[in-house]
Length: 431
Image (tube, rainbow, N blue to C red):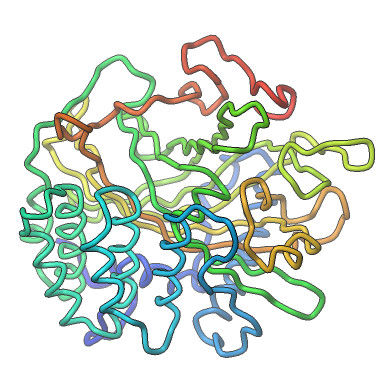
């Protein structure tokens, strides 16, 4: 049974988003000593610096939030994708002292099935600390409502109720002994990965501009526009110590082709119960950094710095179930967790766009900017969520139907056909 010590620390009467409670533990995080030596020394140095930085950042964020000077959480302006603008408008409510819960609930009911609707549901979960009984009741209605014709939404609501029951002290066997979906499962043997799970990220990016700190809250659909559409890719045989994250970035390449980036993660997993696993992972990557501040934008005055050692942090809890078993190992139906890393946003561009960054405007970076030699000007962190999705048409739950563009080690295979083709625009930059 899951013990109280295994849950995020919170007062017994407190109700909050489960991943948000996990985030509050970061200022006490310690890197597992026995994992030293598992990473290249350059990556390990990045990890050590990251641990110190996010302890400080999460401590300030959790305990001295009122000292933040400027928060950019307004709805997006200008000619933007309507769905992205709506998403940011919904998420702008999350940080308000008196959020408009009616507005978010109405959007959940009015939006079409898809990522925008699920993002709105995740935003509503972030308000559990302000209206727990109301939001729990609304989630309960969504979990049972068949008139919406949206089984993915209902399953997301059931996952949310599982997490609530877990926090409220219910026995884990009662809460998690049953999958949230009873739809048929499709699995294709022989593929590179056994699970390809789409993810939602909500991000808080804090950029230092002189003495000013600008915090930008980035909603899940806006995150996808800036960073790409992300999915977690898992192999049954390495479920307990590694995964690969793939990002698919639209509208970055001038010829309209997709851009792909991969992040191999390594670490350790604790089994909290047969159905709950906690994954403590760090990325191990060599990535380019673009002096221009824009991904893949290079000229004589603005070079690219290739093969920089980088990392970022991922702490997650998966809920696993035997109905998705591969090689007799239960695979995850859902995940929730938190992340942290260093980044760079070009100050002039940030000011010019009033914080409304677009694709390629923000770079994941080492802790030291390789162009200026100064510390990275941005830290980013937040929470993420994932669930196995139904296939269009059949509605079957898909374990590994999404195409992948790398090998099992996370090395770029652009066409996903084993040819290991490079990036078509900057072939020497990405691996």
